[in-house]
Amino acid sequence: MESMSAVLTTGETPFLGAYSMTQEKVRQEDKAPRENRMTVGVPFVDYARMTCRGVNVYYGEKHAINNVSIDVGRNEVLAMIGPSGCGKSTFLRCLNRMNDTVEGCRVEGDIQLDELNIYDKSVDVVPLRAQVGMVFQKPNPFPKSIYDNVAYGPKIHGLASSRAELDEVVESSLKKAGLWSEVSDRLDQPGTGLSGGQQQRLCIARAIAVRPEVILMDEPCSALDPIATATVEDLISELQEQYTIVIVTHNMQQAARVSQRTAYFHLGDLIEVGSTDRIFTNPRHRLTEDYITGRFG
Ligand code: ADP
Image (cartoon, rainbow, N blue to C red; front, side, top):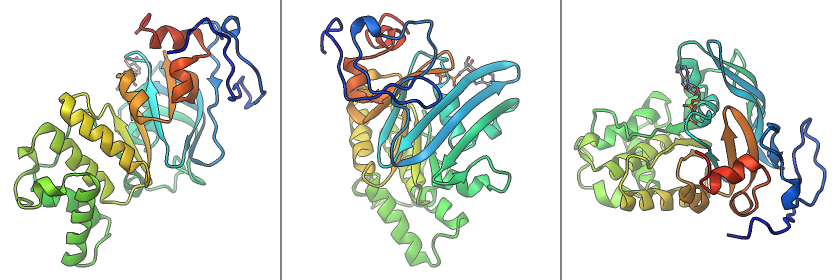
């Protein structure tokens, strides 16, 4: 890691509110102070797959996400990091309206997938959650066979018109999830009988089977051993060629390994966004620096 006291000069432009983008050199003494809760770094990209503007989330009276604006770029892995309770999962769940299922949760602001306002009244959340799929912390295969776990989504979304087509979708999804060679001879056995790492890859295959554009991952490796974690991390890098991925992780090494951009949250504020390399070497905000150097969190 570069010396924190070095003069910091990067090609990135800072975000200083109202989407202003001014070129500037950042020196150690110019770092945003801890009291500043405006986003610094580069939250916007040229070719966004998702755009989020002025997003606020409330659980009853509790203001959990405070005026967050950020883009998710095409075919990038965006990591969301920050101390427990800072709002990473809450924000992730905004991206496919999963918070609709949480009682008392209210989302305000504008979130678009390509040009579609996903909170528009006309949007049906069932196909939306196929387009923006989700993989959870704990692998949660259905109590069905391996085959049916993957075939279920394509069946209900009408993505296969014959058994042969369905077989094809199941096989290609399991291949993309790196699981085919381990399960091809036992597709009729229960998904719940697989190891934890295999179950998580089955859940990834299930998400892939309905042709998503974006895959949201909420600490997908936190229940896995280091070998299964490495397999899933390799898989994330492969999937990135075809999909846009947003991953919440409490593991900074994981964020550094798998993502190109990193967003740092603190108490519901989006404090800093930038290229992962830059965030971990030259954080611009004191709070980001405190977190990545282990002084906080
Ligand atoms: P993180 O993923 O960073 O750990 P969360 O998004 O889970 O953070 O939580 C952000 C804040 O919202 C926390 O203060 C948490 O207690 C609160 N919160 C999360 N889920 C709920 C809920 N269902 N009801 C009320 N408060 C919640």
